[in-house]
Image (cartoon, rainbow, N blue to C red; front, side, top):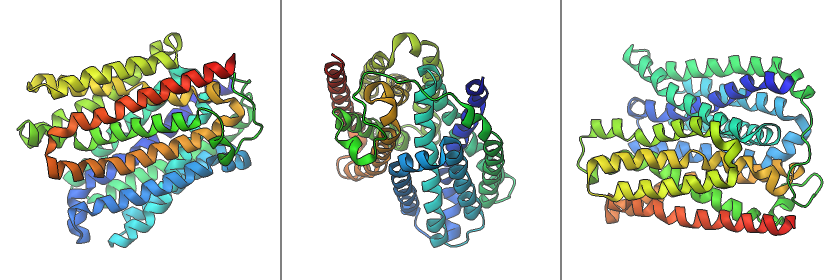
Amino acid sequence: MPLFLLLPVIYLAFISLGLPDALLGAAWPELHPAMGVSFDSAGIITFIISCGTVVSSLMSDTLNRRFGTGLLTAGSVLLTAVALLGFSVSDRFWMLCCWAVPYGIGAGGVDAALNNYVALHYTSRHMNWLHCFWGVGVAISPYIMSGCLQHQLGWQAGYRIVGCLQVILVAVLLLSLPLWRKATPPAAVGTADRVPCCGVKAAWRIPGVPMVLLGFFCYCAMEHTAILWSCSYLAFDRGMDPAMAARWGAMFFIGILTGRFLSGFCSNRVGDRWMIRIGVGLVLIGLIGVMLPVEAAALGGLLLLGFGCAPIYPAIIHATPANFGAENSQAIVGIQMASAYTGATITPPVFGWLAQRLDLWIFPFFLLLFVVPMLLALERLNRIVDRRGR
């Protein structure tokens, strides 16, 4: 019963994780002139946030063992709430950079702790829906910011509203702490070698961990490059009107959101491995569509690309206890998150640098560079796990 009651709380926590992610992009056209900084200065803030998420992801195993998932999640959300309220009262760029530190640390703590908890206690279905709720949060926040801007309330009001929503969630999480304590400890999962209370350093030495880290790095490199640059590809390579490109560029995100919702209905039967394989197959077909010199094919390809990406991230996370053991999963999920954030941070700027020199036609081919090693790494992981289970 406690696990069932916890589900709404966990889903709300992942909505809160997604809520701030799109705020900076929605506010930046008005924010950067007000701060007197260049347009590309947003990259400095996102870089600081990403560094914070990497650090907190690597620390998640130690913190989780000391405080428990419920208290760690509540504390992490509180950090993001304080940071967002700090953004709302900032009038200098350096202040935004300072508040980006607790924001990144809080976001990484929520992500690693909840992903591991759901992987241990719930089925693959709920892992897909968990990440679907992250998409709900990302979809809501631009509307909050645009409403504030349209009503002349300023970008600060958008951050203030989302910060207050986070404070309310902190209260909900604190009230739910007895449910976290009553939750049944996870049974031993999978056939991985048991290494009691595995830490981050020990996790690196478990066979197969480098493969899953490479797979995660490649996936997030591909996903975040597509999120950032798909609209520019449609506008500047395909000649689409910028306003129309912004609208149709959302096809990738719609594909992810819809795909994760639908994946929840079949992932239990299909299994994590085949969800990843099917997803990669759809990604490859989608990239072929994006490459074709037909506008409708490119738009359909972006939708299919997102649809294929949808089950990959949740399936990799959910398979972690089965692949490496329940007692090792928090440490490994933490370094998986760190690898994911590293790929998401480094790769989109690298693509921008290349596109400036070679043009945007390289977009689908650049994404393809990450799909193939991702699939090879994850299939190699499967063989290592199968050999260990014999």
